[in-house]
Length: 386
Image 1 (cartoon, rainbow, N blue to C red):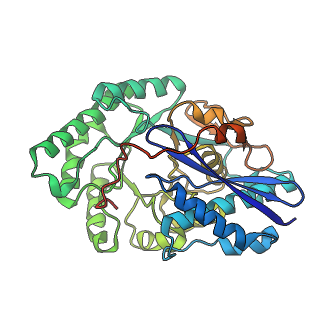
Image 2: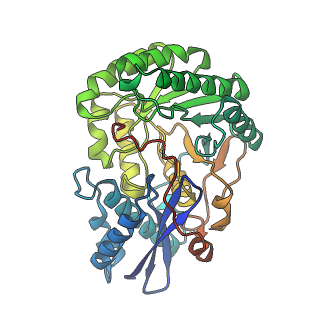
Image 3: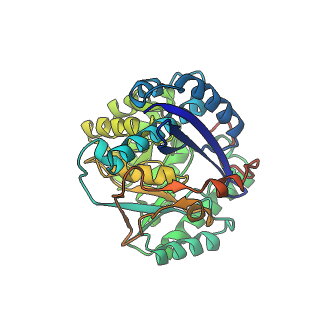
């Protein structure tokens, strides 16, 4: 069984979002799917990297190809190149599982659970970014069966600009949105807030105090995770712990090497590796297991499409420190492109897929009918964020 073709698909989902998928086919007719969706319109670069990778892998067996897909934080191509390597690993593992006739998680061992708790990410779906708009989405997702909700309402906010009256107004607006979601969701639901590294130590601590009435499940990416900011992250995490709030982060880290400093210093309560640039199944599982050694919870970053979502479900079934999985809700395109049955949401959980391989394939005719566009309104485009 040798690799024959790699076919990239860049697909528009909404005015904010494109998804990117990779299909790999072998000479005996088997095919597998991976996903490499990134924010910010990087699809042309990803297609070029797919061509490079295709030339490297053509004619290789799966076992010979997999070692070439290891991701490294210092790779010249950064997230773009690592996203393609991760998607290729996902696709090849999908093929291996299909060939073996087993669900993908069985390639790594027996599952520890048969259902996965998920939270609804309502942020990208919130075209009405008022408190009422966010609250309405929370009520809608609660009616669908979600028991936890995440939003990132700090549009246009950055700590260095807090001297500007308009920025302070945006900050207060974001607080109102979060409190509105808490009211709409009810006292027992989880409310998660993603800050996209917008705060320094004083403003992060003020944010935690301001949001005490919201009783947050977690605060995500409050401050920069760069090495020079690790002491700040440590102090913010300790302050949050005193308030009963978890600190989550790490979504842009690459592989175990990228997470190691955060884990060794215990700077996070929850690590959020992303399967689409942490090395696929093998890489994300390695991060989860390493986090478990340090007593850190595991919750995949997963604000993208159905391949990442299904893939993350498989990994979440395998690790003892799993907490909760992100599920993006953005339009109806998610269901339209799938062939196969996605697990149904029951009591805020998805069942672990049990059909061979990933559990779904994608409708290539539908993918081709939705070419990518330049995203609008990218909320994390400020180069200071990270």
